[in-house]
Amino acid sequence: MDEVRLLERIAERDLLAFETLYRAYHPRLTRFLTSMLHRPHLVEEAVNDTMMVVWKRPDKFNGASKVSTWIFAVAYRTALKARSRFDEPVEDRADLEPVDDTDPERSLGQRQVSGVLLEAMSKLSPEHRAVLDLTYFHDVGYREIAEILDCPVGTVKTRMHHARRYLKNMLAGRLGDWL
Image (cartoon, rainbow, N blue to C red; front, side, top):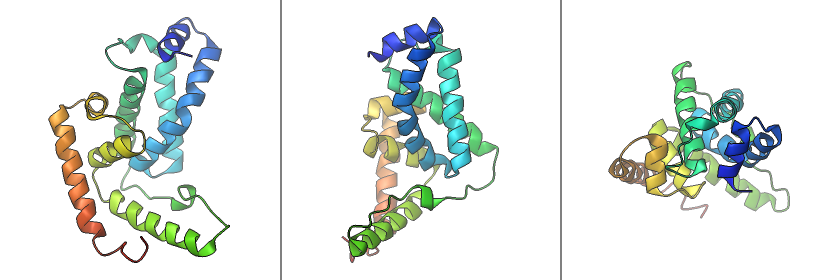
């Protein structure tokens, strides 16, 4: 169903429409917020807080962007607030890595690559991680990312450039044996 129509129905307090939108966005928001918060309990809380905004304030969506852009913008601001309430995040990698028992050697290699990449990404600022995550894991374009992060497109491009350069330097030589 069209997401704009779902929001219209949510504004009319249609619980089924909300459940439909919640189910569609829960996995996407969980992935996005995990890259920023690294604490499963904070991620779940932020997903629920984000979707509570959707339930309580669907009228805040003005139609100037896609529904997904608006929801990710709410999630981003929610994550920044959650981060500000806590000290350095502690990453729970066990929840982030899928297990593949069919080829143990390949599985080990994938976990090692994933671990190195996650470690490098964890050292990026939340803004840089958000740009990478939205681009590569959610297939969001720079204009939409700029709306989500409430910054100019040029800033998004600059953050992407610096994030890529940082990762390239951090990963240089560390992944050669596994790739």
